[in-house]
Image (tube, rainbow, N blue to C red; front, side):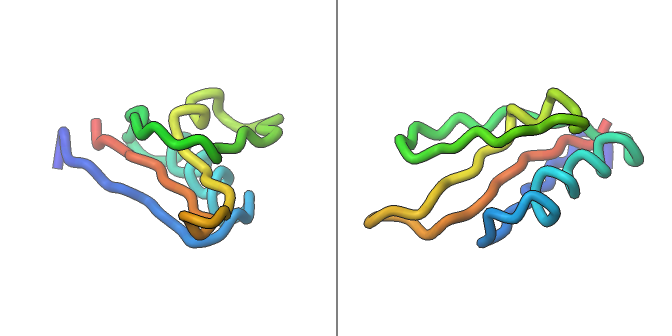
Length: 78
C-alpha cells in the first residue's frame, strides 16, 4: 500500500542479485529508496555504471569477524 516499506536483503555480494534487482524495481515499480542509516565500518561501494544513482542509499556489508556478507535496500511504495 502507499507509504509501505519493503526491506530487501540478501546474504550475497552478487551485483545481479542486489543492485540490479533494486535498479529493476526502481525502473518498473512505483517505489523509491530510503537511505539505510546504520554505522558500520565494513561497507563497500561498488561500480554502479548503468544503475540508478539512488542505489547509493543501499548498504553492502563485506564479511569480517563480526558479520557475514550481506546487502540491504529499503524500498518505499509511492
